[in-house]
Image (cartoon, rainbow over all chains, first blue to last red; front, side, top):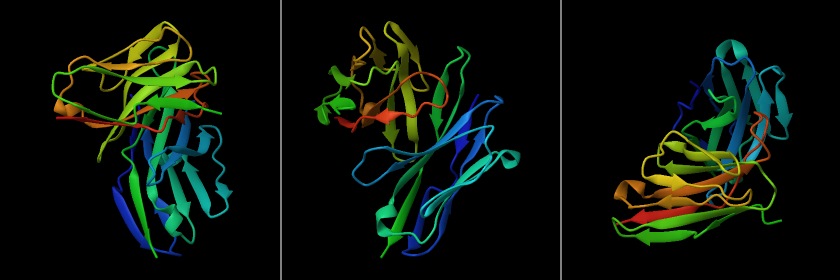
Length: 117
Length: 114
């Protein structure tokens, strides 16, 4: 069975602080995919990044960076110099095979990030 | 560029009533799914479909029915609504069931069962 744990329910920071959102996953598959999605207050869900299990390179996109470590089964997300517009719920997701052979995504419970001006 | 369209956006039901949440996508996506979002529970998979005529249960299927007669449409039926089904429902689709596929979500449907 696959599982995603986002232990931080809510994080509150002041603008310009750096913040890291944790994601720990469980799967027995050797091939799997990890994702982060963002849900701003407007409610829609937006894709941020995808990583496959064979690519442990960290990724940086502007103020966003992602640290994937297979040794600790973690795929953490860091926002540098946070801004009020970063306030959202962030979901980590794992896509691994089901018994039928399909990849069905499993989501964590989400971390609500509140950035105060 | 409609993407994934969900209707209605808001609905209030009384216990025991039935209704259908509609989901349509125009991207020729094979995979479609329904999630419910509840406070503190994240997104939980209700049902999914890997192609027309094929559906399967997710994590929380009880009380819901689905069918997939066309590639484009994946309606979610509540046969006898219960207050526990008060939630925000999201339909999502992707090109296939390969693990790398990114989900495209609809805007959500907020359902209240009194």
